[in-house]
Image (cartoon, rainbow, N blue to C red):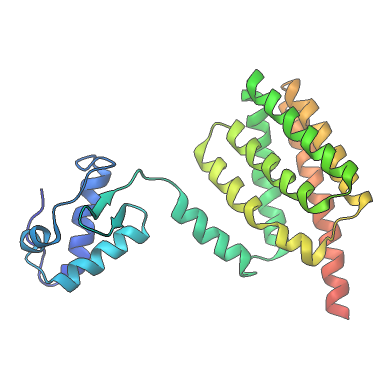
Length: 240
């Protein structure tokens, strides 16, 4: 399966050969790569170079390196985890401005909820109603932290309902990390939480009717209004 690495680019060649074997389906998820000694001989490279290449493949989410007697490099099921983690770090570092985040959300979340409304199954709608009931319970209890967590779950589930894995992981990445912006620029109160809750009641009602246009309009308006509140708070903080 593997051949000697090109000596002028050994490290890169090792990574590319193993990566291509995985992407081409020659190495299925769960497959254990040959032992380190065998790989070293196959690629005609040093142990140090091989180990560094395997670490890069692990960082890419293509393999998992297990320690111990029964350990080794195991091929993983490819998923979006590494991309999600990178996007999460970018958001949490403050490297994305409120304006950029809002612009992205208005464009993308409107489209996501539009698809969700078109594709929602009876089971999806039942789950959305369950999440809404949970949000209502936290609202009545005045538990804003749990309400925000439920809000995150609701947004993420809309991504799942779109039946598009790209939208799904983008939605999850954003809403797993966006609440730090709320803590800084939009501390929740009874009034703001009620406004949020009312918006989602309207969105779910539109989804239940499979009214994709209404669902998208409500979502865009929701994002725009709450972003405006955060922008005003940020501007006031800058003046202080």
